[in-house]
Length: 139
Image 1 (tube, rainbow, N blue to C red):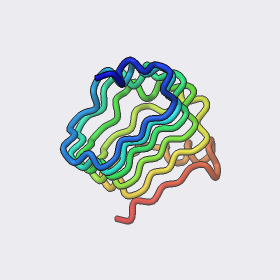
Image 2: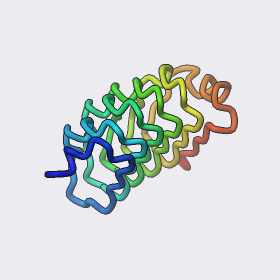
Image 3: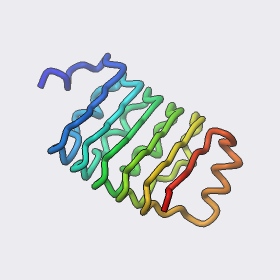
Image 4: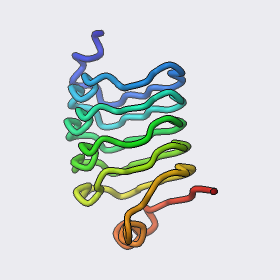
């Protein structure tokens, strides 16, 4: 309960939350957050739109969130985001538009088997990020 008032919190790591189905909306109130990692949460289905309020967020990592299907569109507005890491999110189907992620240096996507890339998106990301674009689905 008290964590929702910690607006100066810079890093939040959630792991092994085997019954967590959604991140609470108040996560978007942690406006000082620079790093958010959610790992080993296989029942996580949704992330709140309020993630778009995290204007200082530099790193977002999702690992082992196997029922998550989409990221909220508001993630596409995180202009300070430098690192977006998606690992073992086997049902992830769609990413938000990453065009406005002007600080993005690295996008790593591994074993997100159902992820659909729009026409030309992979090539556009390779040109923009160079060695910072990592994609391997192992299908």
